[in-house]
Image (cartoon, rainbow, N blue to C red; front, side):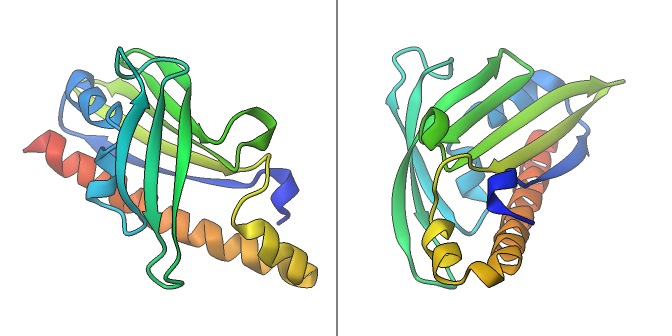
Length: 164
């Protein structure tokens, strides 16, 4: 698995709540910080109207195993009211990752998906891959494993909030 291939992961959950309830949670960039162990907090930066295409927020992160802390500006690059909320960490070709939620009614419940892909731009993995190119597959797979665990915690946490 190569970073240049923009690998990704996804997590999904069926929620006993209407899409509007789920949407209110996923369109707030602070919500994932309530459940995962890497994103510490998020703050709107350039978002006079809140969530909309082009709005930005800053994510404050800390990797618990490595002890690294960093901040990243995120740009809302996918937005359809009530259905799709996504952002890139960085912009365009320099984006280090893409993240997005999709919300869809399934009968009287809601299906929530949380997707992510790496790249296309450089990220915190880039120096590790450059230092050990023969280990790229393992480096990428391990990072995706971290992402998958945090994403699963996030969708389950959103389920808990929406159903309470």
